[in-house]
Image (cartoon, rainbow, N blue to C red; front, top):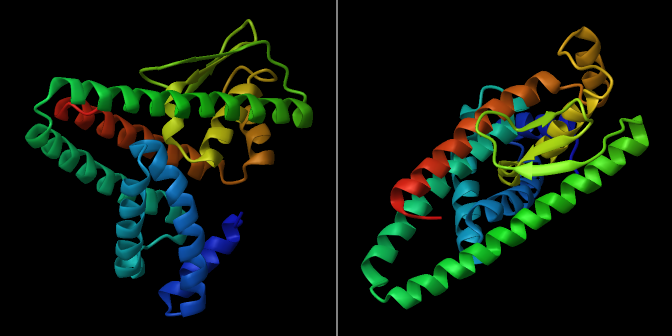
Length: 234
């Protein structure tokens, strides 16, 4: 995994015309995008097409990126715009070609199976991250629950239980880890005071940036879900 300081420097050098830096940045960007985009579209061919379009746009407008420390949120923003376009195109094609109701049901069943697999993957990832955090920081919790939440990524209760928003499946793994650590830190400090943020900063020195990224992702995910509902796409 490329460290933050490394990709920031790569982005800066690439903006200055360093081809080797651009190739290295493109390699790690493509790998991350492939995982991220697949979680949203659940289709191999579409994922490859969207990633390729993102890479082309990245090459074209990288020099316009003003803050290289926001490279990932910038790139994921490009990806989400491509995904919205894909969803609209997918809906138009289904409207024109899917006249047979049985065929539509088969497609929806396949989509549901894929979504269930992604949700299961999220649960496994969350339990693994939580277990590692407990071992490293001795943050003790009882149970982990999963449900779709309307206003937050996760919560911690007085019974020492975590509730995780199932929409976390749309986030990069690093932000998923941050959300889990944030909630588990409440086992030591319930309030968002200086002591709490000092604990967070020990593991995530760029926690302020990650908080901003979570806010950006919240609106991006809500936008995708809203468009999917309007267009009739699951």
